[in-house]
Amino acid sequence: MSELVSTRIRNTAGKLGLPHLAETINEYTRRADEGKMGYLDFLDLVLSEELAVRDDRRFRQGLRLSKLPHHKTLDEYDFSFQPDLDPRKVKDLATLSFVDGKANAALLGPPGVGKTHIAVALAVAACRAGRRISAPAQTCLAPGRGWRPRGIHRSRGRRWWTAP
Image (cartoon, rainbow, N blue to C red; front, side):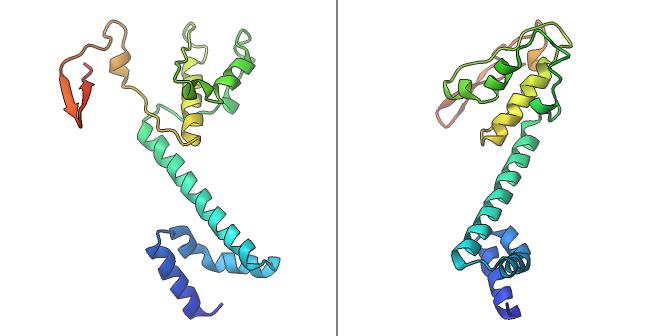
């Protein structure tokens, strides 16, 4: 591909908001030449790569904004450490069907059994699925403190309670 066409594609991709394409157009054309790709295959490759980059960026940004204490997955959880816990139930929670049903999931048990690990893993799975997540501040969850309304704030017609 000529340098003039390559530069024009970079500029156009930048204006269209496709930064990954602008950076890697030469690699894409090399892969297309090696694979003897047709026009539609090449376009499919470029668009799927750009979508994957955007999804990854959205996932990383969501995790950063969530302020989770750590980022763990269910693959890292040692189910042999807690033999009373049924792995099938936890993996069923990871499908996030309870979120679609607008239900809650309560993780109960004594200290040190991995409740936080599972909760964070479910939040990471929700973020991977495109959901917005956030971790509550620890001071709001401290025993004996609870959520006490201090006042009502209005934002676009909604009522917000402030926590202690």
